[in-house]
Length: 153
Image (cartoon, rainbow, N blue to C red; front, side, top):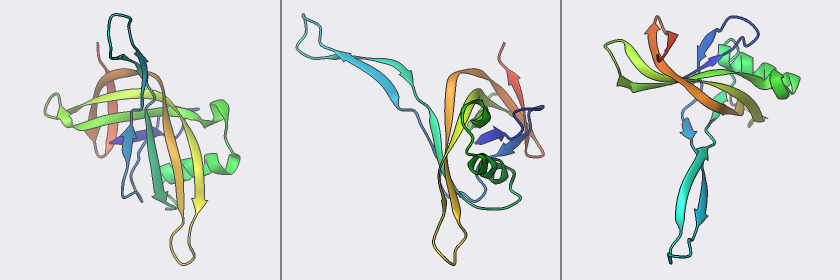
């Protein structure tokens, strides 16, 4: 599950990412270095970091909070800090207590790649949530569909 902060200039306001979407996956794209040491015939590969992103395409559902936010970024051609917010990545299959899920909070930037579609069908907006920097690890409690994030101590 992913929740996007749709009011980055104010107190965090979370909206679930997924309405109007039939698929979505995080890509982790490992940054690797391969070297062959003079004492070996084969290379040694180290993982230097990750470039995490969520590629999405959703139907344009006016009134959906995530759609309205991302469409607003598209309309403004938002760049730099205007395209930045925060995202909660929640592992709903990793419950730490009865009502708490493992979660990570990241800074992120959002880029829009396409908007529109074929005649006679609901148009779509394609976007990427680019996760920036290191996460704040913690847990999330969900109440009435709204997340409350608690950083790990």
